[in-house]
Image (cartoon, rainbow, N blue to C red; front, side, top):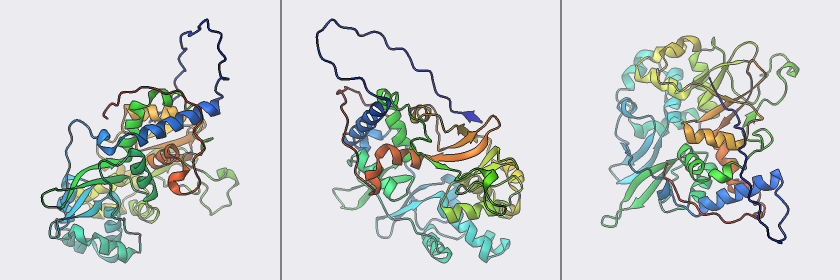
Length: 377
């Protein structure tokens, strides 16, 4: 497991000047933190989605007439295109496939599912969601020239991890899918370009209420109830399909795997289930997690853990260095489960409560202007 640790603060060189000026009182930690957040939000308002585009990238768009099995051979998530109407048709996400697996597992036998998935088209996924009674994803999108702040708000308000960016062809008037903005790329853009501000974010993740944490001590939870509520958990003996149900019912993408003492031993993700589908191993959903992990892709990056006392700044510095989608919060020397932090949690805090329609942002505290050169992620 990878561990998130807080770096030691660097000593700044002396800037003493012989001037008889009245200086404002130094920042308190809270003031410095608020000033840094205000500066980051101002930075996002002054940059567009275009600024986040890497120098070189590829975009895969799937026609809604394509069958699911072929789609999964090349990509897990991608924008959908209705070729009959020359129109954007939403996003294919991992959760769509999880819903499909759950539908087949409940309503059909293995032979029927294996045969039907060969011809099942992407355009029929929405019908499956209706059958299961789960919410259908909205056809949200934004323009590449929109500010990053507005795009981040839309990601939060729609509970999406990816935001398609659309423009219009000036000759045909048809929609054009330009790119897809992800939570990870947006947060990495912040971590690259807001270095000074990130160094001021010293307050702990738990104090900032970033993430979801165990409601009460497991020892005090009555027998028969989930001691780690509201976090969904599993053990190495849990059947894969039970975890698939958690993914579908809760709209989550990972479940911590713990032992009898609540110590985190692994993490099972939606992409692990997709690997089974690609291999045609639909019957493997009856396997225990311990058995399914043996079929995991060798490029699995591992479980990234942190403690509740780690800072937001340290977390953003980690995102700058490596691709991170979530962190498992642990406590004690053995690493007992305490919480889980997703990129949605981090982005929601950085943008502010106003993005969720809860309350307005506080007034921006004093902060000296800074010059910065934007770096592409």
